[in-house]
Image (cartoon, rainbow, N blue to C red; front, side, top):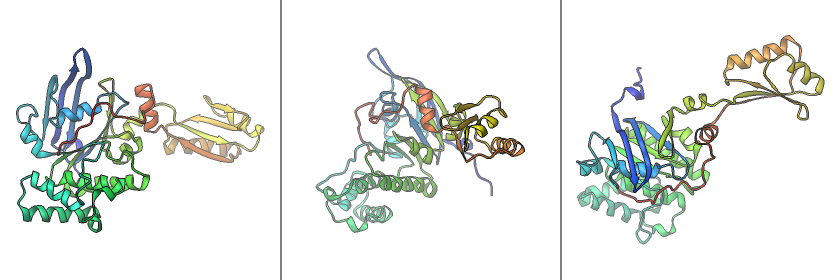
Length: 329
């Protein structure tokens, strides 16, 4: 069976030279994007990088100062209604009505999409079942946990059957179990429905788990883009760490390798490595040939935290809200 590569798929979202300024403050500085249909794209960046501004422009909430974009083949400036008909947006904060039940929230959204009453109820029942909210359908949303509210919020976004979904930090504030439930839902949307997901997140593990491609935005510019593996491969610092039983074995092992970091107090030897199996095998062969046994061996490869810190020069912020949040369905 032949699998189509993401780069060979038609583009769901494109942007060329996208800029945004507020007075003399340049927020976005020439953003170029091409996001294939049926994929997950994650946009990472520190506080104030311009992530939410990018989402707001692409979802027709605010105009760009310059550049062009196409969303589902439509120009968000010339044909915003066509763009809105093709997209759904789930903001950082749930946009559900606490005074209504889960079912009533979904039916209200169906009314806003001008679905007839029968189809609206059918769609609401389907989404309640899909998001495992059936038993809570008649309960006021005010009684819901954070995870339940986020599931309902995403379900409301799906009432209009969008082909492209913008998720602005969809799991902020959720506990680890609820976060992983949301991940499974997002994966299912892509795998089962073929939707395109544009994700912003403050959780680097989330991007690593979900995204086909990741872009890093800093000071309004894209500083890197690629798969998680490609981004990690750009960052130096991978190594094999060996711990020995005594100083004698440590020193003997250190003499076998060239550029290493030796920590006598911890009895460890750190050998630069790309994390590949051939490199690991070569290190073990050298030790075996010299009849030197290590007590423990660990392999460290750069993760997205390392990528983020290296490319932006600062760790991610706990609060990634780089602009006022708005929610559009």
